[in-house]
Length: 152
Image (tube, rainbow, N blue to C red):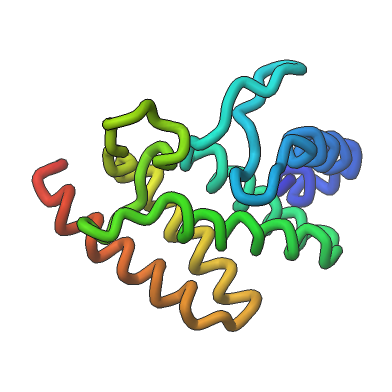
């Protein structure tokens, strides 16, 4: 979407918005979007799928000004905090616990996924003024830096 906007290519933007609609069509309240490959929805529960779509929705809102994109992004941001939060570490899980086999616990998401989630939360805060998202983004980054301090 951004590339289409920067090059003033409405056709690129249109294709990107159509793809976003296709992915969001898999959204289910309480479980988010499915991982989509081609025409198939292949599973749910992956943090990176949720954050990628939340960021794309925020992009779409910034591009079009359509409130529906903003509302959808807020649904996913709330889901991130509710389904992926790991209270013992202050991080987000790579896979929501609802989607793990019994007796397994989720591992923290990799640093890049946590950074994307923090970016989505911060962007949501910047648009909405929802201070708890700012606080969550800050806390998530602080915990990620602490947890992954040995990663160069």
